[in-house]
Length: 500
Image (cartoon, rainbow, N blue to C red; front, side):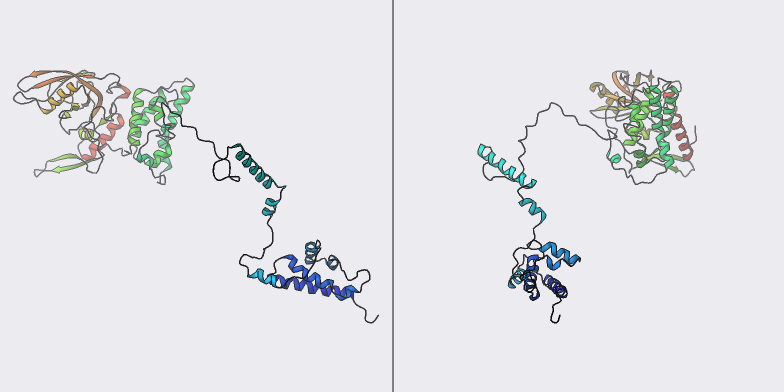
């Protein structure tokens, strides 16, 4: 029929025009879906062909215009506008005003899910907020609310702190692996390189300790294990590869794995080590924990050979200026251990045992004598081990020497006296060390007598203080050890002194 209208083509054409207009307005920063859709719907309602369709009466349902299009745009368009009830033209000035607003953005007018949840009276958040408000109101009514500003949305206040109780005693709990440490031990560089074989050699003492613990649990014979521990400790004194990182890695100083399990009864786990083994372990631990890792017997001693014009030579020794030394001006053991040994008297001076390189008595005026060395000085000494008759030095014109005076002051003060025995004692003295000097504990000056008025020679009676371990002059506990003698022999060869 001529002049007929192709409705399908007209609808497709209008949909295409509406989509283009939607995209154009969207790119022009139109803000809401209502603003985008309303003008298009108004245009489609007024489209002339729709008014002539019988039954429509000029009104086309919104969903009808898109029912024939299965595209993603058509589906979304249908879902967005299917609930539209009142479609009216948009004021063209309003989008421009919104674009000019500094607070408007591309999503202005949209409501976030969090806000919808907060404004929803049935949500859990709104319910909790209402509950807090009602609790605050009830608290205010009951008179318990704080005076001043109300806090309906703040968390509840913490209860008032109870006064701290007064304690009679507060004991510190040490959580370190090593109970007593030093600044050197705490600051060891763990990145220092080391040989794994050295670590295994150092850890061997830990293995022996565990063997002793297992054997004790089985009530077995520990004699051989104790002998192995003793030998290992003597050799460890002269390990030349020992370093800080090895000591920490091996845990040889730790309470739960190392040397403290030998000398500390609280850490021994039921093992009763021989007293000399405990002393040697404690001596080595004390040395290493202080950072003294140099095993050389003459550490801190500068040795030199002096040659005279006639061709004769002599070896001299002096304390090194840059090596730390322990002061000898202290009463008591001064950190020494019973049986501690030195190859020469200057070494004992270095470690704080005796303050004279050659003299036999060391002390300070008014404070008495701190130490004496027993040696063959031609005096009428008598050595019975725990009891000693010790002669002072010869004075002049009936006046006692300084050393004799110091011993008399010690007797008056009842102060302890360190006693060292030298290899210079007569061969018949069974307490004499085979080489060098040995510290044999603390003695008291029990009394004295004048045996020569002209020289003011005094003889003092010294008695060993009770509660100390025996003098280490015989048996497996003897000092110096075989390893110490071997090391000293090597040093004498290097100095050209010989073994005699």
